[in-house]
Amino acid sequence: MNVKAALLALLAYAIFSTHDVVVKVLGADVSPVQLVFFSSLLSFPLLVLMLIKDVTPGHLRPVHPWWMAARSATMAVIPACAFYAFSELPLAETYALLFATPLLITLLSIPILGEKVGLPRLAAVVVGFIGVMVVLRPGATSFGYGHAAALFAAFCAAFQSVVLRKISSDERRVVLMIYPMLMTFVVMGLALPLVYVPLAGITFGGIAIVALFGFCATLLTVSAYTIGEAAIVAPMQYSQIIWATIFSVVLFDETIDVMTLAGAAIIIASGIFIVLREAFGGRSDNTPVLRTRSRGYTAGGTNVSLILKRRSPENHTE
Image (cartoon, rainbow, N blue to C red; front, side, top):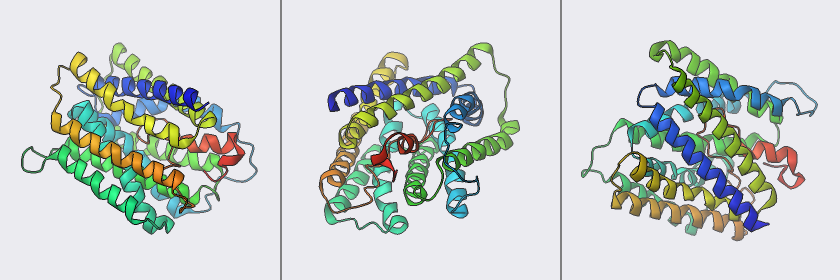
């Protein structure tokens, strides 16, 4: 079943990568704020169908309102930052910086979850950030808004994942899903008049593809994690760097930077080490990286862990 799960995950991340190509193309003419608003709007009916199946008794008032507010506000800006990075940077470079998310999760889990991170994982984090520096090459290349947006998206994705791990056992699934969605609509809706441009039919069709691909890839990811071990499925996300390399050459005529690929390799190796250490190290009850099962920067997407929380009894703490 692990082989099937890995194949499903590879398919999911191939679709995610195609989703990001469409975002990059649309981002040349449309603000990421507008892209996030409309793709989230188109995804809303699909998510509502999942929400109405939640029969858990209770109300919609959060048990942890401040943590919920912080997570919702964070999730509202992640897709816009990631979409902007995709529009400004080569795909491989954007992915390399977004792949820093597991490193940041490991660090944030210390103050937020009280996680005890041993020397091997800390060493992996340090090595991973060396990889980030290899990608950025301070002094050799200019640091632009696209780089800042990608790193901020990675930090926010890490923060919301750790907060979810902290409060998910106390909050209803519907509460954990509905507030970030509403916050995204409000924040992007308030900013929309500042950047709005009329959408041509083909552009709106592209946004519909973004919404559909994000939703379908998320469901495939759910299926992969349902039937396979997280330690097998999680590293499949790094296959996106392969798709990024192919798409960059074939579709965008971008030159593949050797240093970017080298830095990405270092970051990926660090991330995989952290996942395997959490899976087989046996010293942690939280395993924050291993339990982070969503990309985190797909507009209108939902957290895979929340769906698994309903599907599988063994994932009740997700």
